[in-house]
Image (cartoon, rainbow, N blue to C red; front, side):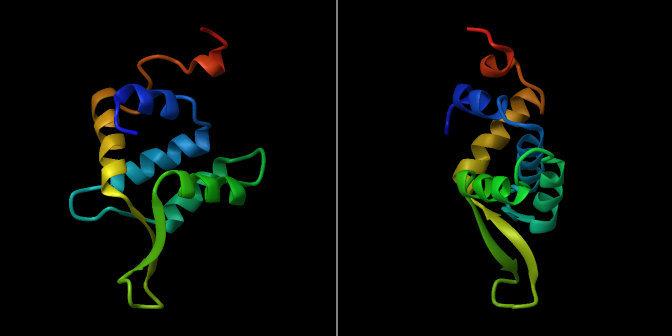
Length: 114
């Protein structure tokens, strides 16, 4: 995903839990960190009322270039995090910087328009 149009079609059609998780992760995808606390992503999926939030979170993590790990990495008692792929998350941040967390156009699938 590298274009605003592609990101818009993806982001604007997400359910609430997934959109919230995108916003949380993007807020943590910075030039120095590129990781988000696992507990923050877990909390976003507490919003997933329908379906399995565990399965939905697993799909979200896999589809959004997130890798489970710890900080510091070599510490088995370290803080659980998801590392964020900079090339992907920089594109998400560029979209959110330009449009905010709203959508410039509603999702056509959700509004049944062409």
